[in-house]
Image (cartoon, rainbow, N blue to C red; front, side, top):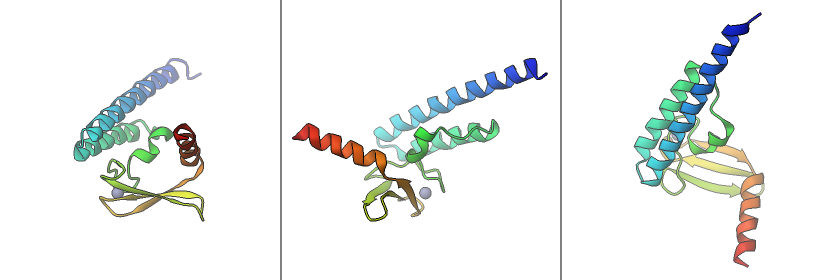
Length: 120
Ligand SMILES: [Zn+2]
């Protein structure tokens, strides 16, 4: 019933996702060069596309920007990360707006353990 219309829409959404990936890559590059404000700009552009096509930014990007002000989060530069072992979560503070986000624990712990094993 939807036929062609549905396909077209899917195609547009797929292109939009590709553009988001592309912009997030640019954001990573800008941030790694120390240009956080440019990185933030790319994040906002990616979000703009997401809103236009009603696509949520992929989960893999969640920790890269502040969910309140969309500032690119680069540890030590635009964010402070601490692990709260009591509450089993990672707390990321955005240094742009000062708000704190919480992420569940799992991944970091595993990565840390892996690094420790590599060193040993
Ligand atoms: Zn923020």
